[in-house]
Amino acid sequence: MYQQMIFVNLPVSDLAASRKFFTELGYSINEQFSDENAASVVISDTIVAMLLTKEYYSTFTKKEIVDATKASEVLIALSAESREKVDELVDKAIAAGGSPSGETQDHGFMYSRAFDDLDGHTWEVVWMDPAAVEG
Image (tube, rainbow, N blue to C red; front, side, top):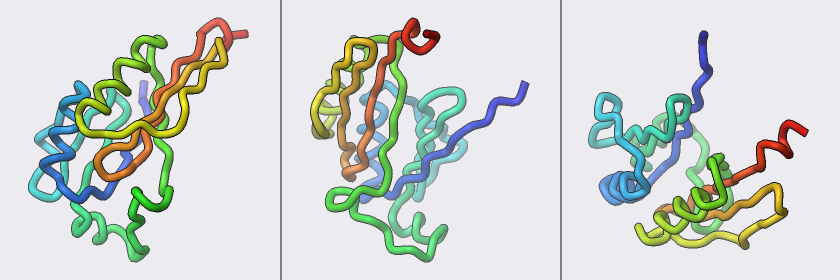
């Protein structure tokens, strides 16, 4: 059965540092789709973050590239299998050079934290109680 994929393309200032950052979070790099202009970060079987140098990113758009440390361009939300996995991923991101973003949200059935990566892109990590989703 076909599974639709999502490719999130993000401009980065330092491709090598960004590759290192995401591998420190436990993600792998698909070298087949990576080179001196891009790194293909495999988040899951259906989610890939394409980290592109700003110069290369600009070949795909005529729009101004947003400085994500000063303006919001996108909020990326990833699910986690437990509250502990939310904390684990966000803590890894901060230890790898990212920064906390916003406040921890704890609604009992839903728990989330967020971090900004090295270029200021915001990544929210969310756990929802499966019983609440089914409910």
